[in-house]
Length: 226
Image (cartoon, rainbow, N blue to C red; front, side, top):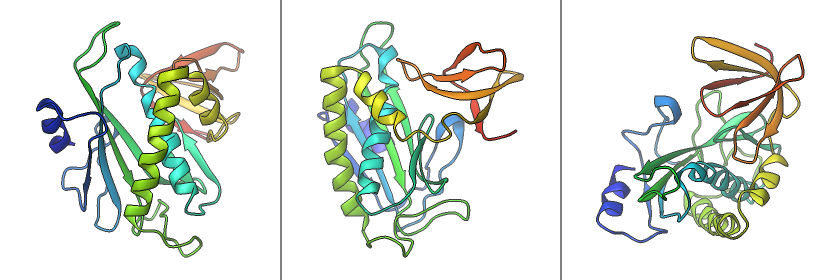
């Protein structure tokens, strides 16, 4: 992502994309690291959304839909999207997304947005999934990259023209764990309930046992029984 950040600061246009053969400093959400062996797909895409900073986090869902469409095109079965930024196949992680924003505040748009994506093509950790697992038509990183970019253009245009509603609806149709138990860890405590979807801003809706809906916009969320 650092390479694309430098390009963005130098004035590179929206849609600039850089692919790495291997990452030596891959990073994920909440400071986690992303395993980055050769044979997989690592991309960073530059966008310059003309939208309030508060809405830009919705582009994580845009990227998730684009990745889902691209991986689905490889014949992957049982594909779901896990809030806020993971793509699963058969309940195992096959791809992840990281957003980094530069500038912007309040109703002002950011200077630029970087969307980092990692997709397991040929290699996955023991708990993960990969595109080429012997059960799908063999595809290389270039195929997934080109499909992703085409679908990202589609969903980004939909978000720009129609807002979050069509993105939310499509994401919900693939939502992992919908209606199931979840535990959200917030600060020093945690809240248990049922995953009741996402709201109009992309926040997770946790419905507590007393029926009250609580919106979770950050922190760690565990899907399934704690």
